Length: 108
Image 1 (cartoon, rainbow, N blue to C red):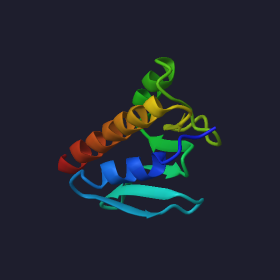
Image 2 (image 1 turned 60 degrees about the vertical axis):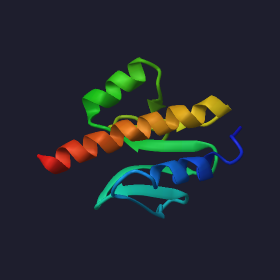
Image 3 (image 1 turned 90 degrees about the vertical axis):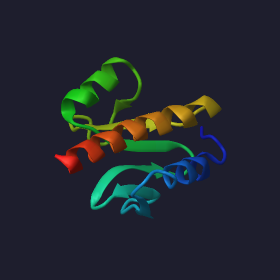
Image 4 (image 1 turned 45 degrees about the horizontal axis):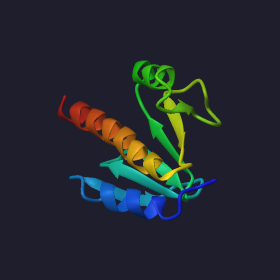
């Protein structure tokens, strides 16, 4: 299951955020970076993977906002599946959290 056009919507939204660049992801899809730091990546119109500090990742998973990473479940990464239209906005909100964390750490 996927949301047709989700990748394009997410890419277009993130490119409006200051400092965000897109790059091909090593396992396929599009990676989003601020400087050298990845804030997440998307695989087609169906899956978004996003890194967080472990504590925040645990909070996100506990709140069922996303699941543990589909391959590396013990890391700070989460996986978010795009199954319906509203999931696109939810994915963008999670990516925004990762972006804001990256910006805050960059300033420190």
